[in-house]
Amino acid sequence: MDAKHYLLAVLIAGVIASFTDWFFAGVLFHDKYLAYPEVWRQAGGKSETPAVAWSVVLGFLTAAAFMGVCVVFAVHGYRALIVLAGLCWLMVPVPLLITNALFIKLHPLTVVSHALGWLAKLAVAAAVAGWLLG
Image (cartoon, rainbow, N blue to C red):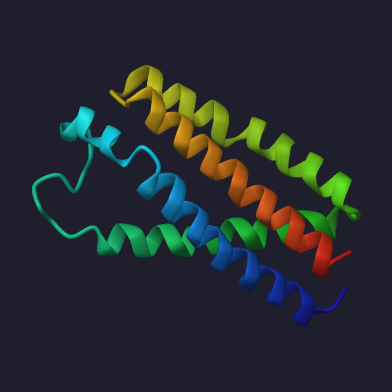
């Protein structure tokens, strides 16, 4: 595996992840954010552009970290990569989202959409890793 394949995989997975974030965190169940408007930092008409930009950057970081794990631990093959994505999903974002929902007023469908968004983002990273790093 060379650096060009790694960087290309990060770029492709990061771009696609920004679209999955847009759908799962911005479109799906969007009206449920209004259930508890006081929870959201940008309530009050302020621009969300800086938060969205940082979210996109973090999507690329997620892709880079996933590709790095694949390389460092020599994970190859679509099945192994999908299993890795699922385990990463169960290990980090699912417990974090559920714990946050237990202590912060979040509509349950918002939590579901964010969890599905993380699963989609990791599945995309796994598919791209299988394609370019395998």
